[in-house]
Image (cartoon, rainbow, N blue to C red):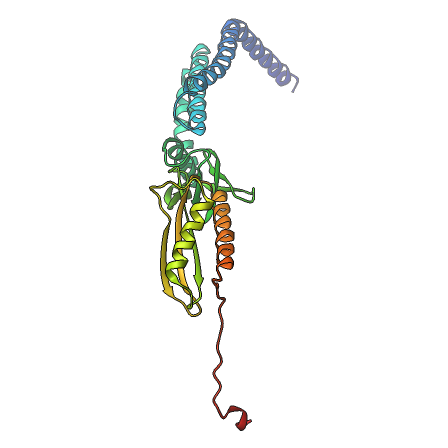
Amino acid sequence: MDFNIDEAWADMMNRLTSWLDSLIVNLPNFILALVVFTMVIVLSKYVSKLTWKLLEKSSLQRSMKSLIAKLLSILVILTGLFLVLGILDLSKTLNTILAGAGVAGLAVGLALQGALANTFSGIVLSYIKHIKFGDWIESNGYEGEVIDIDLRAVTIKQSDNNLIYIPNKLVLENPLRNFSTTAQSRVILKCGVGYSSDLEFVRDLVCKTIKSHFENIENTKEVIFLYTEFGDSSINFETRFWIKSTSAIELLKAKTTAMIAIKKAFDQNGINIPFPIRTLDFPKDFMKSS
C-alpha cells in the first residue's frame, strides 16, 4: 500500500514538473496571445466607432448602421481569436471548434426560427426606405410614430404616448400604411343636413367655411364636396380637403376645427343637422279600441 502511494506521488510530481516545464517554455506564447487578444478588443471598439462615423452621413437608418458596426466588430474579434489559437499552436482545437460550431449552429437555428425570422426582417426593414424613424404608420391594427427599429421589433409611439412593439416579421409580412410618404394628408369629414335644406347653398357654405379656416389649403387642391345618400333622417354629404401635415394628431385637430366651423356656420344660417328620429303612425281608431 505504501509502495502504491509513493509511486502515485512520484507520478503526480513528474506530471506537475512536466506541465511546469511546458508552461515555462510556452510562456512567451501565452504572453503574446494575451497581448494580441487585448489589442484585438481595442481594435474592435475602434472599428465600431469608425464605422459609425463613416456611415453617419449615409442615408441608412440608425438600426442598419448599428448592425453593420456590430458585425464588423465581431468579425475583428473572431479574426483575433483565430490568431490567438494559432499562436498557442491549437490548430487541432480550432478545427474541433469549427466542426462543433457547425452542428451547434444548426441546432440553434432550428430552435430559434422565430427569432431569426425577426432578425432578418429587421435587417430588411432597416434597409428599405418605405419606413424610417419619425414616420407615422399603421400596421397590424396599431397606429403611431416610428421611434425605433431594431433586430427584434419596430417600436411605435401612439397618440396617447403609449409604446407598441410589433415583431419585425409581422410588419414585413402584413400591409403597412405610411402616412408620412407625402407632404400632405387628406381630411375626410362626413355630415348630414335636413331634407328642407337648400343643397346648393349648403355645398357653397361648407366649401367657403373650410377654405376660410385653413390657410394652408393650396389653390390646386380645392375642397371636394359630395352628397352621398338620402339617409333615414338627413341628406348625407362628405367633404374632403388637404392639409400640410402627415401626423395623425394634426389630422384629428384639423377635423375638429372643421366640425366646429361648419356647425357654427350652419347655426348662423338656420341649417339643421338632424339626429335620427322615428315616427310612430297610429291607426285612427287606436284610442277607441283601447
